Image 1 (cartoon, rainbow, N blue to C red):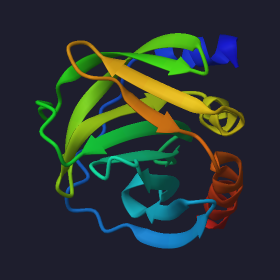
Image 2 (cartoon, rainbow, N blue to C red):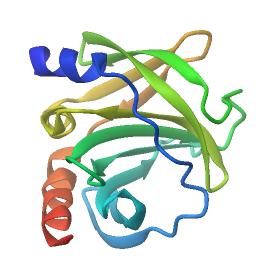
Image 3 (tube, rainbow, N blue to C red):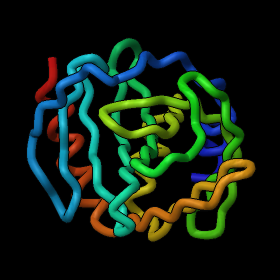
Image 4 (cartoon, rainbow, N blue to C red):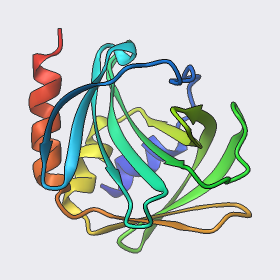
Length: 165
């Protein structure tokens, strides 16, 4: 994971339109994660789960609008002082391995947060083998995402993505 994750995390953030008006289609659930289809992403499938704090939602998925790429998004109902389009330097700690990247601020369906695309789908799929992802943005409190169940959830995500044409 190390080499391609560094490459993926170092990739420039691509412009992604605000998803505020998008209606997601639920595909199913697996291991505590919900699987959705986002028609404006190709269509692309993603997994989503509320963090135990009840205020933070994590999404990981596929943007299939061009060459498929992965993405990670974190949204919160608590004010995080994130503005639409803001560029945010972040550190990803994946079970002790640290990577840097740049997120782009977004507002979506009552949440604000940030979105980070990855040019290598294997980075997203490789998270299924890990236990904890901690995301720290400059000047903000870290957000810890437990990755339990992601292996089964990503199997369902791949199945979902295989049905999208």
